[in-house]
Image (tube, rainbow, N blue to C red; front, side, top):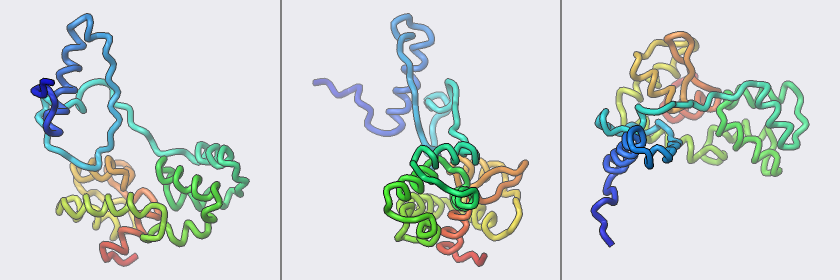
Length: 201
């Protein structure tokens, strides 16, 4: 078996995807190929702009869920919640699709109540511990991003942390925009990162 065309690094792999995309624009056989790339932007890998598969095609970003969408998910999980309970979940996770899904799954399976979730969510005991720890490690590897996020957490109103940092923090799902300024996405992030980064609330 010849292995010369097998990618040996992320750069090789991304370059391969980009090459396939370029071929599909001109070659009739390759035009039948459809690439769908689902990715998170939590980790930023420096890529050659001409080899990156992420700056071509049609980007579709998964937005935060609205209160109506979360209400629909609550009902689909067989939960009969009050408006106050729904609001408590929205405050805790901010409509973040993954965080919302984990919460509803845990509660619907009888593993915990909403009240218990609120108590343990920002701790290592909670169901988000791996997710939160991964974000923390990524932040700690980037001093500028860490400083920007600390600034976001240390104030009670939206703050301008610079275009690049704001974009990266938003891509990680940690903040939301208010005009050109950003604020924490949800209470969960405020509590967990505030504690881990030593920021007084």
